[in-house]
Image (cartoon, rainbow, N blue to C red):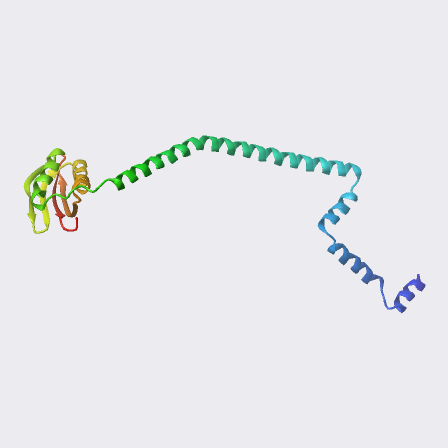
Length: 191
């Protein structure tokens, strides 16, 4: 024993650095090689149990993946008809919009006839125009009473048919008959 230790001391090397070198070499090997070495060091019975456990985990993962794919396919099968209906509805809307763009704008009502036209549109919607619609410069002022849904319909009709937009609209609280009092001013210029 003395001769080997004295020989290693005389050469200037000790056995410890070679052990450190082998540890460094095993740290630089690939994880797969280390896993194979670890697996090879197991007893045969332990290797069979590890292989069985890996097969169970892999099988469970495949079953979970298959169930997820089936559920997603069913969800897509249910949502596809609704998406098709929405698409067809959008196509119909685009065709209607194109038809509206192609339709010529309605002829402008002469300013002198606007009060009568506004009153006629109001009476067609059961809106009581208490004070005559009157022209004041380039504006038309209207006072009346109406239910809110009829008033909104009337305002939309005036905009669509005569290109009038209210520049001012004042509403007073609804009375016991369900009608609100309103004062509206429509701008005539820029139609």
